[in-house]
Length: 433
Image (tube, rainbow, N blue to C red; front, side, top):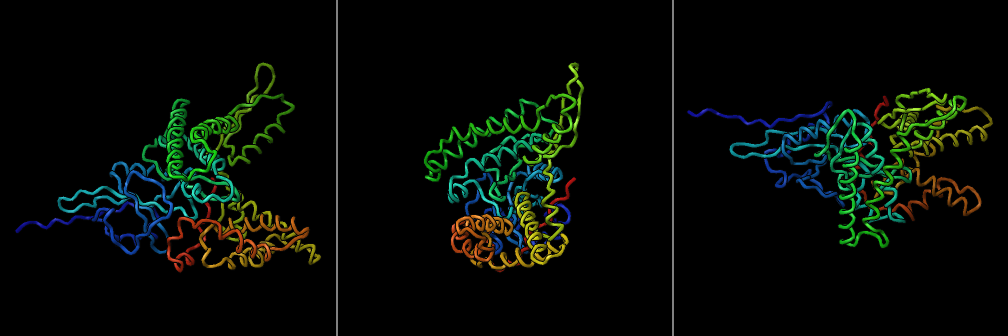
């Protein structure tokens, strides 16, 4: 009697893995391209990938599944986990599924990542621009991400718009890395390695914009070559600002150090180590070792006060509105109002009513914190025009009637509406180190 051979699919998931238990019942032994499961969803304006990539929704979360050689999948799994530990904006990896074959069938591994909620591909941003073309904001976001990677010793090897997703952040864009197949992590990068990454970025960004132009999606007046060249120009300016040494007189030391640190913070970077070197001419050389991860102070402050998850610029705007609301309360009630009381009253009386009032068919267009920020901005413009404060209620109605409907449906709108409404607003921001 022949021996029975049991083939076992192996799942290598990051802890805590409980959130992914529903994925275990997917048809892993079949080629990903042939899957027929009710949890499979299509993503509008998805990016281009050289591999088979499909998306599934389970327990209110959307996951991206990429079929790839096991060695590359395990390597990318490791790199994405390291990026997460360094607090660099990238998709969060959930795990790798290997040993999927049965009998004579040999299937590649599948890398599982969490889909980035409220994100857009560069194609979506150019296809549905809100006002002017997003070229400048998009390049700034891409360059900032590349600088963060290089400071961490991370050679991308395939820096491109296709390998990046973008989130709205209070009028700006924030870039997230989504593909590390060609990446390498070193203790530090040489100038040659950084230059090679920039050369590849120029080639890929230029090619992607030529593709958009051929498809009629690139606005008139935008030259793909000029835009691609801007990557290197903007990178050089940001890298110089962050890494250059400053020389000054000893009596200037205190305010010059403070000024430099403020500039770094405004750019979204933090100082890990400050070194002062005395030169032969009695002047002082300031050398700052820049911390790779984003400070995230405002994000954590907002979350600690009212439990709202937001990007850094959104959090700053909401905290400012909270402070203004506290001043209004103290003046109106003629008594001191603590920060804790003001925060809870702001949440219940200002923020939550606005979020609850978002029309059902428009939910998911933007993150709640971004919607509230845009309403604050809209309120300011309406008040300037009216010569008086029109109030949040009037501004919200005007925004929901005239502005939010023009925002293109975001990528996660494929999720069933009932399921989307049940999904939490987000996870707490990463603990700053």
